[in-house]
Length: 415
Image (tube, rainbow, N blue to C red; front, side, top):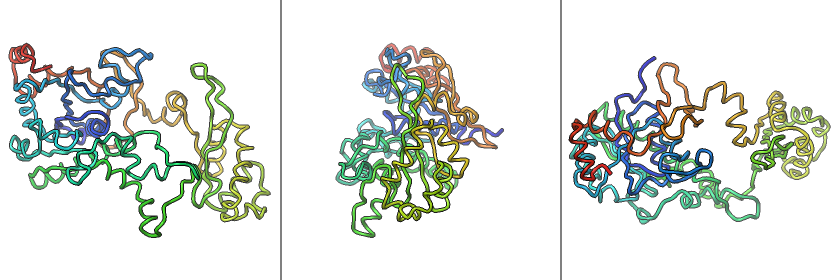
């Protein structure tokens, strides 16, 4: 098995929260040496967020949120109030291939690590800023947490039920989406450097990344001069298309009954014929209210009631199985217990990973969503405790002696 694709590539990781760490997570999965630069005086907010093991918070190393998105990385703690910390960071940049941050516009420049500064340290360095709105334009200094970017991207205008106001997408979509786009741009820049010997600066806008995968709404306006209508779980053409109630989960989760639903999408007349037969109502195909796609859309609410009369007496797993066997797109609306413990597909593909962490032990985390036939890629380690690799990086990567490190720690440069 060949070495990981990014083996030998080092990342000076100044990121925090979600977009930046999610970007460097992809690079770590691909074999890069990601060295996360942190500070105990102002730790990443995700180190202080739940979920906690056994619902017991305590310290900066127990957050499931942080530990999920920091797998395979190393952590160094620096106190940038001390000039020696700046010198350490400069030495790390000189030994790195990529410098990445997702701070607000201008923060890296204020710290002394903007692109013009770091290219003087290493001329072929690749630097990327995953800011909320990019380095130019009137929004460049706006605060850019995901809950603000989701509405601004257009996603909220597309999300919600008919005659309801816009709704949030349920999570800060722009963050991980921006992270994946950032990783792609970095890999492209590494290819360019391999061919030309030139580094470069990447100015990335998380907002624009989100808009790029939500273009249908913009196209509807530019082509037809109208705003798309919010239609909930429906589809503009297909019917039945939606989320349908099933038998509740038989076991409670922490004493609470968990509702179960299934998603069903029927694309055309041929599929509807198989669907009608599967639910025991082949006569629907001859009913003028349901015989054609247009008719089904016109009578969608009645059709949905018929569908749910069938689904409500079966489990979501049963419904998904029998419809898939009939060639109909259907899937369990998975709760987290189902994903974590019950789904046979994820088990067979060994999606989840179990790496021992110094403080929380061995817990289940989401792994890598790809497998490569000729290249070794894996989650190499659990997330680091804060500052876990400071001594290791300073001595093995940067050439400091153990005495040097002890002196730096005594003067407060290592936080």
